[in-house]
Length: 318
Ligand SMILES: [Zn+2]
Image (spheres, rainbow, N blue to C red):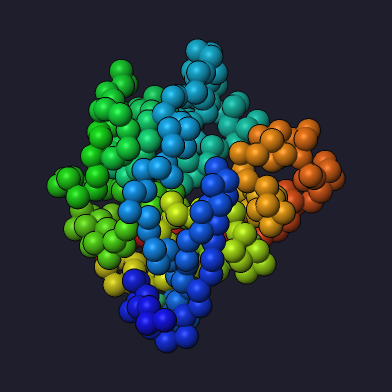
């Protein structure tokens, strides 16, 4: 088959895989191609109407209900972790450590007044929490939300796509949204134009240069046919970063145990939302508690050794 990789253009020795839709269990088949050169795993035949693969239940646009006191304590802990001292914050930090999102932000030279954009933000759950601790220039965009949302803490979420935005930012984040976008070159070019040198792009995506893909192949949980157009390899993400003027400052691995149990379920023909799925019904699942513990441990090992199937890339504009 004369298929050109949509990332690097290579057409030699590419491999093809039949992948089923298994999250909702329609089992519709899609063909993914893995480029023999850059390693990117890509959907070759996107359906004409993708919306049927994004049923309403795909998105959780409701903010979680938080108790007032917990929300207040989180503010102290998060602010302390970000370098804003307080007595209560210090106690909470010593007990619970820093929340993951603050660890991310601490890598990227941002201040409370930095303009920050979250692309594919959904309801803006992360930005909302950032707004609560004092970040005051936060914007989210998501083409799939019903309508714009303006929160009382000043966070603004717009029903827009990336190409409708013309501002510049100190930080642009994409948390599991890049893989859903059709033209990766256009996206990177646009993102690059929105950041001045020294500013950051933070991308979290599934990664196919990982144990879970190599072991489970067509049944890899994170393939998410046909919603993921691209499941990058380290090499293909690096290729785009370099081409559009970014240096990789750091990579973190944050895969979850669902990479193992979800893939194992698909291999045994059990969709994610099936009654026998651990995700839906842990007591009725095919796994023993001991197996689940093993999956957790194995996931930690994979993340520590750079073999987990999800990664976060801290990219700095050159
Ligand atoms: Zn390629």
